[in-house]
Amino acid sequence: NFEFADRIGRVEPSATLAISNLASELEAQGEDVVNLSVGEPDFPTPENIIEAGKDAMDAGHTGYTTSNGIPALREAIATKLRGNGIDADAGEIIVTPGGKQSLYEMINTLIGDGDEVVLLDPAWVSYEAMVKLAGGSLSRVDLSPYDFQLEPGLDDLAETVSDETKLLIVNSPSNPTGAVFSDAALEGVRDLAVEHDFAVISDEIYERITYGVEQTSLASLDGMGDRTLTINGFSKAFSMTGWRLGYFHAPEEFIAEAGKLHSHSVSCAVNFVQHAGIEALSERTDDAVEEMRQAFSERRDMLVELFAEHDVDVPVGDGAFYMMLPVADDDQAWCEGAIQDAHVATVPGSAFNAPGYARISYAASEERLREAVDRLAAHDYI
Ligand code: PLP
Image 1 (cartoon, rainbow, N blue to C red):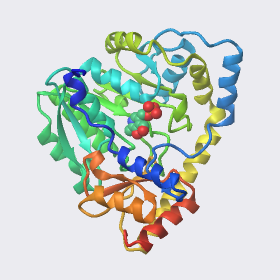
Image 2 (cartoon, rainbow, N blue to C red):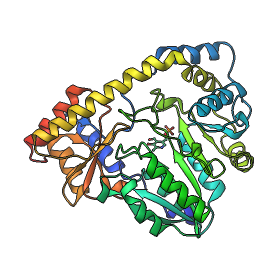
Image 3 (cartoon, protein in one colour):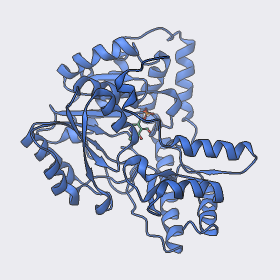
């Protein structure tokens, strides 16, 4: 008979759970489910990274590391971030077990009871949960009317933020929409952040997965260096989801405070995984990253064409590996029906505060994507 903490009562279990449970049940019954609900690349981790991980274990890199991360990796990350135009130093970086932990540490370092955090909807599920756990209050700006682009939504953002705003979370390329925000949009964010003196988390985890455009790092803009917290990681770009490796960059005074949370919770990221991370950031991985990017790009174009053949117009983003399919008003019912009848698993848009859509991940083979569209059409879901 436990009396649970208030904070845990403020969050719900992941909304994707119902869908993955249904998928597992069907699969256990021997059904073939096309699973487009997962947020991870369907490629193996590049071989040179795996070798570097094995070599690091063989070399005995199996103990704790410096809490904030081994210096060589933080140096490599700082060099990488300087390539993004960020004035980064190894002392301004904390290496975490996955980018999710970076977000958790940043939010809990900055946000306390009643502090206002602004989200751009549709927003990745965990931002809301983390802010609520920290006791923060949420204000939201809906980008759905603007095909998920921020630039046309800047006026709405300007109306939402105020001097009370403590933090805005920006995620470009976006999960779940794939939208890459324009430089003008990011400059608009900068102007508001400076005017109202709030901090911005820039979640750039899909930065290397873009099609024909480049992601600008918010911290590289004039006026943003000392108020931006940049999070990135290895899961998506290098297909390393299970390795759990990510990092964030922030001004040194922020790192000093966040470092307390980091050292008293996770201690450090896994030692040999950090060594593999150095290899991942080397140019030896560039070809593998480009091959994956190319594959995602072709699949995206194929999916858009297939949906167009069924007269479904999908707002297409220029990054990540997701798109939001417009579905019935009750997207939860649509997603449950689609999996039960057509055996195609997607995530309800409501999970991202965007009812009326289903998120499709195209981190699946062209053959499976084709199969999914055929099945959805055959069962009148599109
Ligand atoms: N940020 C976004 C927008 C994501 O989609 C994810 C993963 O799904 C993460 C952060 C965290 O990824 P990881 O903890 O695997 O680095």
